[in-house]
Length: 260
Image 1 (cartoon, one colour):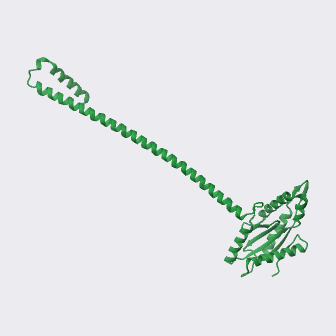
Image 2: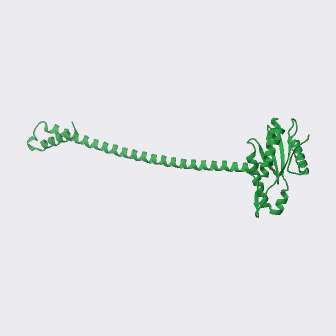
Image 3: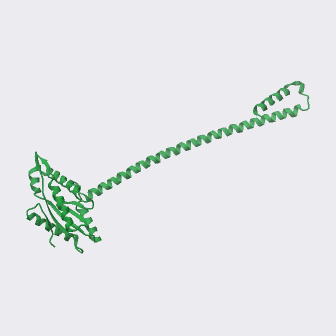
């Protein structure tokens, strides 16, 4: 029976009980008690339904609060993750910059003495063959004296860029000091090294910069020394330096191989 039918039946019975002509009927009292019990049960049921509705509403509100807290917590975690990622990226970039600063010349961005020395020790420890080249810009002091150090620095940067264009990916070129450069050629014999150095000298001689409407260019002197098995890298370096000195004494603008 539907709720609507139950309500119609209750109203009909209530109307019969309200009729004085039925007050003496033997079913009057049992039927009145049954109606009263039904009404009490209905009231209890309505209270239970009301309690259930309030509980469900509170549970829904609790779920909504929990969901909101979870979403807020998730947003905070995502924000912290972004901050952490940004901080880590910044630290990686800073470490890379520190590494770059500690191993490269700040003016030319070529390798510095520290990196060259580190690589030489590695090659010496591994027994890998290599050739060392020391190079010096001819009459660079004259350019500094006549045009100033700013012009000299511009020239050094232009020369470093020219060197990078010529050298192989495996070659390591560094600024050894002032206008002197060093070239580390791994797995390279003396004949191949001479070809590389001559190509590099040709490229450097083509570099020009302008100062007070005057075009400036330079030449390069070089000394080459091939590392020998069992020889300390400092000894190889001394041989290259001696060859460079001989090239300068012989008139500059040339490349000489160490005689040892």
